Figure (spheres, rainbow, N blue to C red):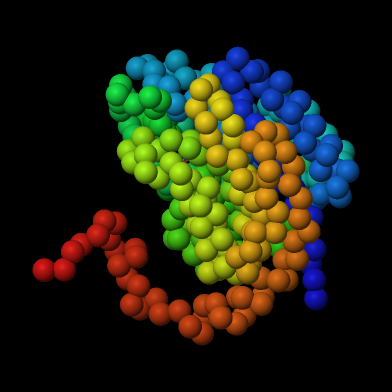
Length: 312
Ligand code: CDT
């Protein structure tokens, strides 16, 4: 048996502050056309794929940052991407910042990815769960990573949806470093996890990690794929954006944990792989037969506590 899906990881190079949404959407559509030439059925774009990674700057009045957020999806700036993808019969996953007003009139700010099927219908919008970085201005840093100021952590957790002939989940950037992200989706039978990221090479709290950024990126996605018997597609916005160098190395990882395709550059680059969703069964039905081998009764700490509690 095989359920083949041809997937394109559509890495982006930097988006500078002065680049308009329409300029960026032109780049997304150029990658979509490359994808079409390769028979791709699903294109995955990075986290915050419509703008520069604005959490690197702090503004005292958060309303001054509202222009970085979308109010709806699709919207006037992105409609051409939706139209062209539908015309070509290609689905896609797009990361962006979303500003919502809730029923009480409160403003809610999210870091999201929307998954769109080949017929143009929206499958789901996933909101980022693990929000890294800091809440307040830290003037001694060479650049900020104030995601915790700009985005709320989603209360929804990790869903899995029937789409593209399989079971598809999403996560965003820092989510990929947490084994729980993959496992919660694994427990819903996930076969394909889509993940956009923006990962600065320089990790300010501990620069000894800088040289390991590529290793850690591959390590977590390969482990997450293997331990849950799922495909994982990780897609970067890389290169030097407003003076901050970010990791490329977009990759498509098989349920075996093997990298089957990887970006060579830190620019706009399409990486393609033919992914057999039935390959997941080899792992989910054997070594990682969860129902047979997992021991949830001894894992209660996973959900009952957050930080480590040391023994006496
Ligand atoms: N965008 C995002 O989540 N980036 C983080 C950077 C490290 S935390 C400052 C990441 O996990 O790649």
